[in-house]
Image (tube, rainbow over all chains, first blue to last red; front, side, top):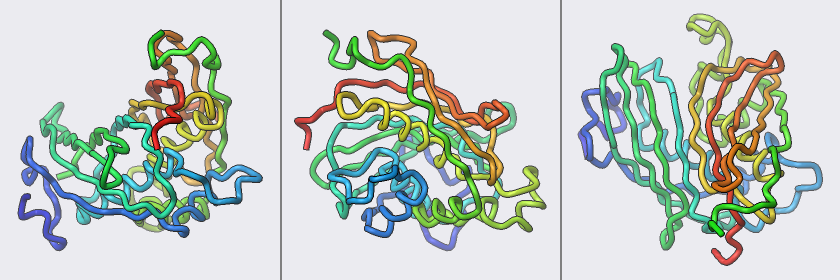
Length: 139
Length: 136
């Protein structure tokens, strides 16, 4: 892992290395998370805890993981594109999700710094989802 | 039959709206631990190219997943999503997610999120398939 993983260092474009791991983090989707999700997306009558987490909540957990793995980013980054593939593994509320990020590519295109990270998420036993996060990195 | 395909997939995703606000944006910030002031601080956002706070991109992406969940489940589910963010939505806009089945054989929907004025903020493709009830 790059030295840029230190919490007090801003991740810059130059810090990414194609093919290299960026970091791993565990996220627990808590009752507080469920309540916040429900306040935004909940359906009337959907008050009881779901048997398994909806994909939108898994995606929110992915963003938390991404921001924890790269806590300091240059201002002006733009989340440009997102790919997600869901395995179908059902994840109950309170489960611990493990997210791994690595750098797929970094390239200059039209004077913009594009960084694409691979994301893999498991519940510790089975894959839950994977995807790619493409960002225009500001510096 | 292709495992991902089903003749009974609906022709479109039922449109789903979300009236964004400072309150929903704060809730999403808490949900994702993303407290970037571009989403939350009008004074900070006024000094950016956007001029005012914008919603988190994945708040809109998740509206597509929710539209899919409500339309497709329990028989089907989203298998994959591939989108690009086109433009940001200011906090306070009502956004609407939807999608149209463009290839029943592959379960492909063209999906989007747009503002009340019809401006696309996100678009891409969603692949739906039969729900995998056997998967825990």
